[in-house]
Length: 340
Image 1 (tube, rainbow, N blue to C red):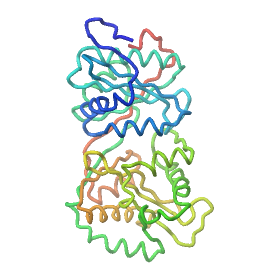
Image 2: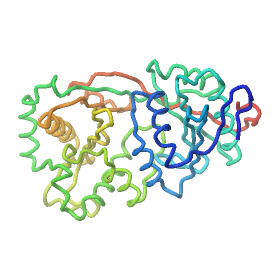
Image 3: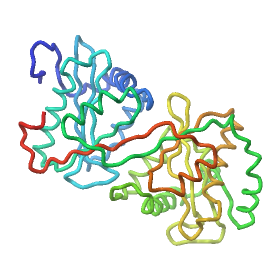
């Protein structure tokens, strides 16, 4: 498969794995520096990919070097057979040569052949994403959702000010226990899977939530090598014995990115225990553990309708650093020739 123009001297092809992982990671890191990845991350994504979910990928090779990575597949977080999530990443040194356009045309051809009705991709308001946003908007894509990114450094916090919060949570009968300490609980992963699904039902994502199979969820979440289990905490109410959750009523996770920063995954508490400071205490427990381990920068991501969590994070010291966008394109009624 070659690009439409013979003057570009570029070839579009499927990745040759595992040989291409290194160059693919280099392209992704150069085009989206705020979300680093490694060859090992890409290999693991392939290893744990749910075979029930369609996915295809292409790379562009120029002068024997991979200069672009693209692909699309089912949106596993909001699954409908006709809805797909994808992206195109061209190394900054290779832009302006029609490579992105060639990849876009080929991916949209494949999407149309599969009967896709909606495509989604992500971007942000950061300078390195400006070219990509313009590319999408020229082709009819529009912003369907926003998500705010915020961050703080544990070095800027006086974590001793939360002693009273921890006292109140403890007096309410709740214990905060790290995932590492819960390794011996044979029901830990199943109960967290049920809790995670329950919590996501109340997260204002702007799209329906799809619950994954337990085995797939464990692969993606609990077995993630970036998950810092010693910095992730579960709120436990001993004696609760809920048939689905056991004694678990809430949890908060921290992941460690390849650049050394940390990011919050899920933070939430079941409805019956909200408004008691437990979610805040879970986050502070992680901050204290990270501070004790040497400290670091923590990022978090929240949707605008989630006013309560945005307010909590601001009170904890998080400051807005970026806005991330979900772009969508409806394919219903579009002709293939008008997609490029």
